[in-house]
Image (cartoon, rainbow, N blue to C red):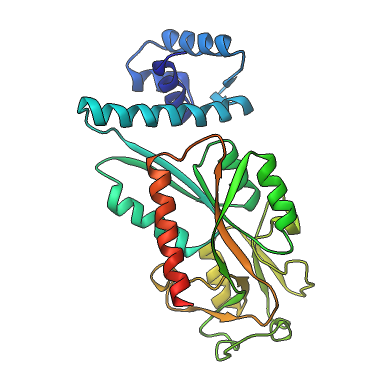
Length: 305
């Protein structure tokens, strides 16, 4: 196995076809195919499955790609430090539930360390996919919450995937509503207050268990239920339908606009919000910097509470 072969795998995975990757690498297509097959034979795994439209990563290949990216990143850092080589395109990916502070930390990272070229990715996605992304090294860091309802199941899933959870802060439950909502003039909201209004939640796909819900108290009956996939849609429906969603209360006017507000929810519960990383992989440069940015924002949130 060579560093060049690892770079081939990363490029082929990004392009989706051997032919496009060969053009990118300025090598003949048969030579690239042979190099990949040689690596697969050496390791005894199938990295790519061939299709009529190109190639796709196998399950083994997804995991291998994560390790390959780690090796290449560390090699680039060594070359930059000791050979004076100009830095290449920076790469980093984080997967998170829908938290404005996680986005703000991502923005901080890009502004300070993005450089002239970068390929940074922020995946606001479903809870199980966050765990899966970090387990398969598609993302270096995942951001999610635990509470007394989901903690046993999520911690078991996190351990089973050889990950670890680190707390950032504890949040009290709040309700997001629009400033036009009949609930907007309340200083605190009870569950009975919410009963007439539509409840908005993030859809969790095939892992649609209550334990993987992004919102606490998801097991409570609700007459009007709406599932969405993205933050913009959720906020638009909050405004358009006088809906609500139960959340951590962390909100950014800069990111979310002036028409969304957070009001304390009168329940005995909590959200332990933190980040997950892989036990077998030390976070790279950008992973470490992103975690530090998360901690700074968490500290600021604690000071505001």
